[in-house]
Image 1 (cartoon, rainbow, N blue to C red):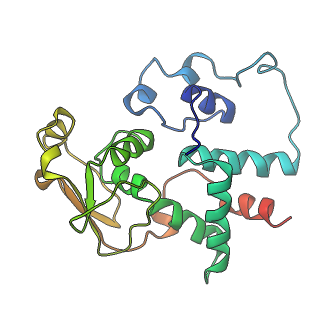
Image 2: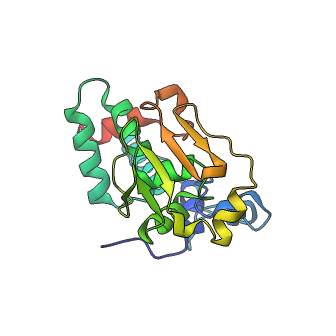
Length: 206
């Protein structure tokens, strides 16, 4: 499966915004955006006027990078959102938020979506007691996402048991059991990812 393998910090610099792709590092002085707050490359510090299309494209690229997706996968998700009833932009964000890797991140079992995706790929989680190792799986309301019993003794998860986790209102988490439940689909006001989804809809509607 294709995946992005270049430096994650370049993506934050390109979008001129923290995408929180490297967990705790993003909150420290080591953050590349804190040290070099301009786009990467030879012409990164030059000034450029951005067209309407450029704004729409940058918003789409930012959303892809927040959720760790490549173009084809993101486009397929948008098309699925467009076929659903309701507002396409809201549908898109709900589909992105209910991906398994994002749910693991939101429940506090990973410090970033990138780490969550890796943990899921390595088979550390179950959904309703069944193996779940595909990051793009959609988690529906009522589903219980749990760390596998054999993974409980891992230093990573032992540390999480001692943490205070602040989860969004659409999920509940029992830290001591290393499991959480998706209570309902997230509402737009409950999604704090800084994305102007209407620009993405405008881009794909051309």
